[in-house]
Amino acid sequence: MEYLSTRGQAPVLKFSDILLEGLAADGGLYVPAQYPLVSTAELARLSRLPYGELAWELLRRYIDDIAEDELARLVVRTYTATRYPFARHPARAARITPLTWLEEGRFGLLELSNGPTLAFKDMALQLLGELFEYVLERRDERLNILGATSGDTGSAAEYAMRGRERVQVFMLSPAGRMSPFQRAQMYSLQEPNIHNLAVEGTFDDAQDIVKAVSQDADFKRRHRIGAVNSINWARIAAQVVYYFAGYFQAVERVGEPVAFAVPSGNFGNILAGHIARQMGLPIGRLILATNENDVLDEFFRTGVYRPRASSETFATSSPSMDISKASNFERFVFDLVGRDPEALRQLWQALETQGHFDLEGTPYWARLPEFGFVSGRSTHADRLATIRDVWTRHRVLIDPHTADAVTVARRAGIEDMPVVVLETAQAAKFAETLREAVGFEPPRPAELADLEQRPQRVTRLPADVQQVKDYIAAHA
Image (cartoon, rainbow, N blue to C red):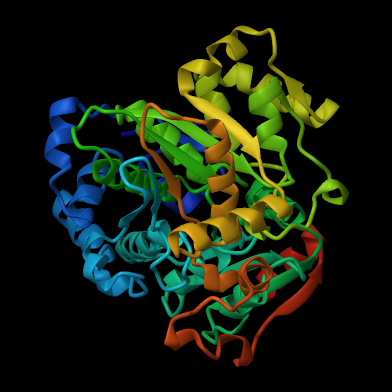
């Protein structure tokens, strides 16, 4: 399998190269040259596999420069119950991503938050840590990982990379815009290879800095800068797996359609669903849910993609979705325009010069229904009402991001197939909003009882590219 840039002006690379590369040299994102197809007969066979073996069967189609037995070892040892120790239902822990029906056979939650940081990002980043270590050891290299987080990517990346000898992590987060639990998860880590940088601005400011540093070819080469954000293809590939796992739990017979509802900020999570659908998984609908930062909902309703400025990005009670520049959206648009890099470059040029592009009335917009997307927007009031309703009716606590997806999925009114909502995090990570919704503190694992009281290490910096570069240069 070869990988090419969405913008068509960067070298074609193999998996291990793009694993370490992050952003392509031309500013684009790496994508596989084609999506491997999975037949109905293969789906039936895959449906019988435990999660680790399922992950290997799917990932080996994207990774052919690591020996199959070595890849199997890395993947299978990642997806074990010991790596995902916080299952709400211990009897189902071996499933790794158990499906909980709220309405039997019709509407369910796919648990993705049983890993060390109680967030779905652990599903991909635990594997990324293994892959980084394996490739760096083979090449006798070191890597400085630069990332930005709106709440969950940072802690999941840091827990996956903590203590790894060949990796330094520099993680940017928006100062004051995460929950106390999220901040404590990151800032309480004491490993010397973990560097937390609180940027005075929004997540989009932090993400812009990451992109600016990555586009400085000389600095990137000199300091061996890599990425763990969802611009890293390996993360997207790993997330594809849980769509298959969730699908197999949701249907009685392979081949029946299923809808997935996905809380969406940076578009990486739902992009994995799009890829699973392109591979042949019978996904009938992909329900995209935003919060008040509704750039993506606006696009899927109107054809206009209009990223917001930092001053227009709201701080909400589902903070991991407080994103107005969805970096992974470029990968989907690349498919939408028929994988034509010139067409993609023209659209992104329009973004730079006009601040938006509009596909309504174009052949590309006419193709959009082929991809199965529907979208909607949820507010703070919706969030509270949905959390309260799910608790009252089903005795299940959900976090605010998952509540956004439940809200939008219910409004979508899909009756002809099961609807599976992808869980973002455990409710314990958002105690303040849960107290407002249901009147009590959500339980948390005993191992994390004192998390906010632990000593914290963080450096506060302005949203300035050069100051971040200076910090990396001094600590790499």
